[in-house]
Length: 370
Image 1 (tube, rainbow, N blue to C red):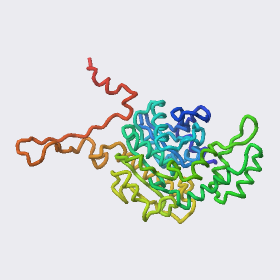
Image 2 (cartoon, rainbow, N blue to C red):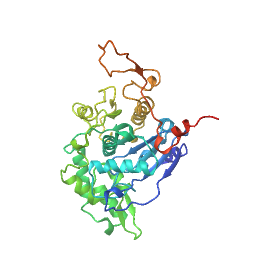
Image 3 (cartoon, one colour):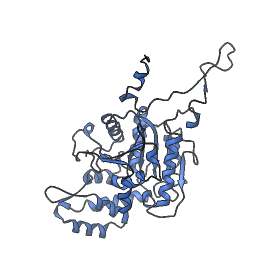
Image 4 (cartoon, rainbow, N blue to C red):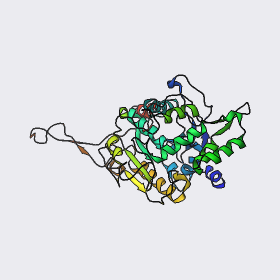
């Protein structure tokens, strides 16, 4: 906890106002979390979504650690997806609804384009937003996630069993100590037990409840529906922008031998293992999904982040990386190269100011200096 508090002083941290509400209309869902302001003015924005049930507070040390240097390149918005944390609740987990929540947050907060990133289920939210709204997405960064059917994975069946256990009790009729005792007895995984404990909230009535919507979550994962948290639907389509996948070497969610193929299928610009797909070396630890819990592993993931943000994110796809911006020219191929009567020209791919929609930067360029 000491290290957690110490890291806060290195950045401007602002928790979003408002409380979680149940919405009858999906379009009314509001996402909330915390914003970490970067260390420089006029930085682009990155929206990051944690794993299901994981509090946004758990990621603050990772992003605010000055050694990780992520705040040198982006303002970071750590947001709980719908039905988790302080974000609003709605029964739908449809992938398009999840994507629309993201762009609605961007519009309300005057963000034209952003990097979208996430961990586990949060990575699914980020990638879905990129698929449905590529014009608002400069790039996608996924931690320990692959766009496939993970409903049969041991890690997910374990999580599903834990949620089923939680649905068997009524927290409003129990004291906090009784709930903690139930968690200790029934939730074998120490990390999930800690996360569920962190999700306990005391109501104005003095009763205890979960910060996440247990009913909606349990209904979603107990029945193998197409909108399951662990299922990537074909209807989401493709994301044709810059993408990066990183996962622990012995991940329980991304099996190195087979689960990297869906990454290339959904994200055609991914160049393959060693380029845009990376496994981070580490021990065969069942808790390696929670990368921020291990200092060495956390630093390597942060390095992958900064490499992506500084060299690839937002760079035109016809260029190799940011070093070629303004230097390398792309040949025009309107006509066949065999046409002797056509003069072939080169052009430099255009790059837009990251917040052009809510800024007069281009309008001001048209005003002549007097």
